[in-house]
Amino acid sequence: MSQSLLEELIEKLQCLPGVGSKTAQRMAYHLLQRKRQAGKELANVLVDAMENIGQCGQCRNYTEQELCRICANPKRAEDKILCVVETASDLLAVEQSGQYSGLYFVLHGTLSPIDGIGPSEIGLFQLETFLQQNDITEVILALNPSVEGEATSQFIADICRTENVSVSRIAHGIPIGGELEMVDTSTISHALMGRKSY
Amino acid sequence: MSQSLLEELIEKLQCLPGVGSKTAQRMAYHLLQRKRQAGKELANVLVDAMENIGQCGQCRNYTEQELCRICANPKRAEDKILCVVETASDLLAVEQSGQYSGLYFVLHGTLSPIDGIGPSEIGLFQLETFLQQNDITEVILALNPSVEGEATSQFIADICRTENVSVSRIAHGIPIGGELEMVDTSTISHALMGRKSY
Image 1 (tube, rainbow over the protein chains, first blue to last red):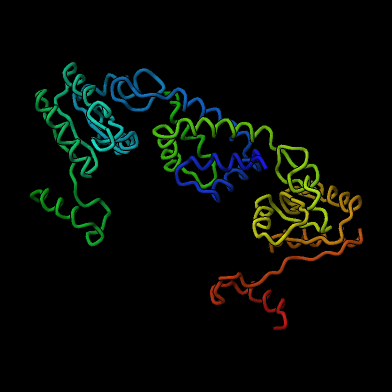
Image 2: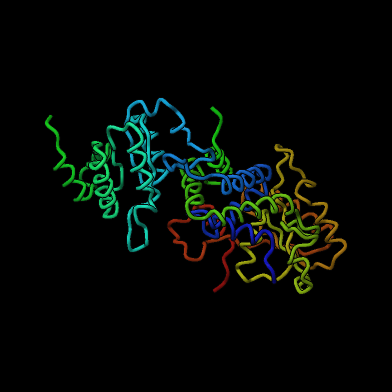
């Protein structure tokens, strides 16, 4: 027997991360029962977003414009700093801290030769060109402390040195609100090595 | 500043039950990064479902057809039994138990005069007409054991008696796999009252 429209909706909802068949079922019934208009609005925005959201020509962040809002804002270039992040959600996390008002560059991944991801796939030549053509004095590396993140940080640091741009990385250590006994050993050793005089 | 398309997508995703801003953000980035085609397919099914899924003319279950699959299947009428449930997901739960092969009737709610939900809002006149025009020998009430569920069960039982149809309700008791000490007192008293000789 062919699939009913409801079954199809329940199946397609499972393309969302963390949504299995039970959750999808609950979502479908919820929309049908109470939120038909909101469901239609979601569908419209969804198709629009999937078709029209591309990458910012300068920082590779997601945007439906030529340049994202951050790159389009001339104030953001005033500090002459650029923060490199792995994903657009990392950018949002840094942005939401309220501590940073410079530019960004989104890699959308890390170097991973085994998966065929080299410097061009994560935009490193575009980053190099940007550093050559713009007045940036410092690059802050805010990549994850994974093996791939470390290798990618190293690669970008080399580019920065070639372009005579100073390069730093965000501190690793005990998270604020974290309990020392719950923190993994590698974080503790980073925290010890990164200690500051009090 | 007006909302970007991405912000709009994140906002609209929050019409889904159990989805807050963080989850919506994760969903949006996941779709943009890896599932653009699936996202578009979801949008198409979603708008189709919101516009075209209505209620089955006979049992009020959700369907895009005139009659749902269960009502359209002549075998389901052979047992001459009808199970009344509160919601379409309750119907699915009973169906998935594999123990029932009769017809259903979905109320989409319970009697609640204070909210303006009377017999006609939950299709009770339609149910009465169905019992008059069709050969049903037993109505099984599978409503939730809430105050509203009890009142609605009582109302439907009265209709059944008027129409000379026998009426039963599903058993309440200790769930299979449930531990006695974890079960609430009201369930235990139902289980005691409903005891069977061993």
